[in-house]
Amino acid sequence: MSVRKSYSADAQSGRNPIPSLVVKRLSLYLGYFEQLDEKGVSTTSSRQLADALGLSAAQVRKDLGYLGQFGRPGVGYHVPGMVMQLRKVFGTNKVWNMAVVGVGSLGRALLRYKGFPKRGFRPVAAFDITKSKIGRKYGDITVQPMSELESTIKAKRIRLAILAVPARAAQEVAQRLSKAGVKGILNFAPVSMNLSGNTAVVSVDLAIQLEQLSYLVNTLTRLGPHRRKTRRKRKT
Amino acid sequence: MSVRKSYSADAQSGRNPIPSLVVKRLSLYLGYFEQLDEKGVSTTSSRQLADALGLSAAQVRKDLGYLGQFGRPGVGYHVPGMVMQLRKVFGTNKVWNMAVVGVGSLGRALLRYKGFPKRGFRPVAAFDITKSKIGRKYGDITVQPMSELESTIKAKRIRLAILAVPARAAQEVAQRLSKAGVKGILNFAPVSMNLSGNTAVVSVDLAIQLEQLSYLVNTLTRLGPHRRKTRRKRKT
DNA sequence: AACTGTGAAGCCATTCACAGCT
DNA sequence: AGCTGTGAATGGCTTCACAGTT
Image 1 (cartoon, rainbow over the protein chains, first blue to last red):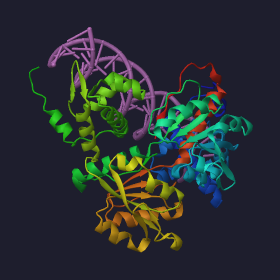
Image 2 (image 1 turned 30 degrees about the horizontal axis):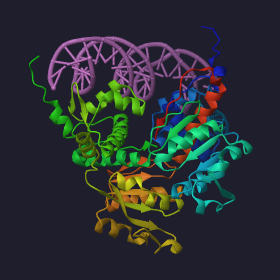
Image 3 (image 1 turned 60 degrees about the horizontal axis):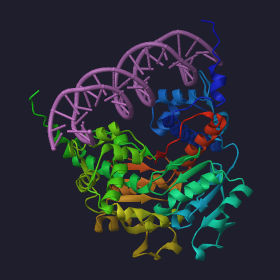
Image 4 (image 1 turned 90 degrees about the horizontal axis):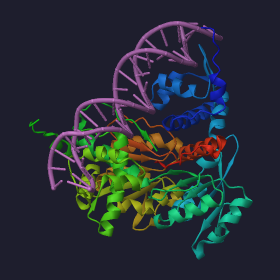
């Protein structure tokens, strides 16, 4: 019973594989910790977090346990400390340079999205295949032709890309990005990617989100509002 | 062993609660079935679906089993039939009228997003609080002032809304939408909603998606590429 | 007293494996 | 032979409950 547990050092160094469901919630926690931090709150508890995000306190503790032991019994979690820890896990204690490929209306919106820089992601280049779009400026980013993709990625040390091209072009562009050295792609095209190398892909299909929603509406109204169970948000 | 199973009729009528993880995959299947349908392919198997989407065949069969028994042993699934069945589950055999609230760059992008009408969702109204934006037209939709929110929702029988307003306004607008009769909200503001009535909410937080991605990149590169396991996409 | 960290139990989701239909 | 539908087995995630720390 006096055996030392050395697992926490292991955990905080980020060597263990955190289940992806947990990683998703860690993002939520980070958002909440950042909010508290801005307000100058220095301490919070698993219960407070749980209530704010609609989870159970036990789950919050288990999840935060993946980072190591940062809570103080009787007190709670130290807000600025957790912000730091969480950013470390996500790698957002440093800024990630991003490319946006495809400058249609969605690409433009993402290029300007305020939430990205706030969380440590900075678009530094944009590409499109359409002649008329090339050379246009959005903020301080000028749209470049696809031919400059590889060179710019290297020159600007870009490791993440947002893919907002039409579905038929997505697979090919993704391969180019991967070969050019991009390590992660956030894909908005409604196709399932199959990348050879070790480039990570996260896909966001907006129509699918709406289908999730219409399914809920469809079934909730079908079984009528006599079913007593307040519906909760389901993420992303 | 000769007892008749009457559960399939039950299932196909959509009375049972399908787990949300399954519902997500059903969307993927629908997308794939629709692609096949356009190409004129009339039949497919659980294995084909599984390979195309990066899942296991057993899982595909289990999932489709929630709809009832529509596969034919030795043959597979009838493509047009499955498209119909799946649309019924999502309620997209009929068109859903949508409102877009908040016509910033993201709102505009969603207003024009081609993937929505393709899947049975049609924006029919847009609202914003900013004077200069009111009256502007996007396609055949004219941006209206927030004061007309309730009346237009009733007049146009709008049941779904896309919420693309700044985080600080999100909660309040969501409540207005809910009271006005909207049954489902697709929320893009990075806040966790708490709606009183029986309005469903699905939230899409784009920064969180990027964090998932950077986590993957961070850990995959950290443990080096000596780990032999091709990374697969994780959806939406 | 307040709160964390964590084994143990319980619950849900996925995979296995095969009977049965075409 | 090819393929579905589905119980049984497995694996993973969540909740419970409480010992231990401040």
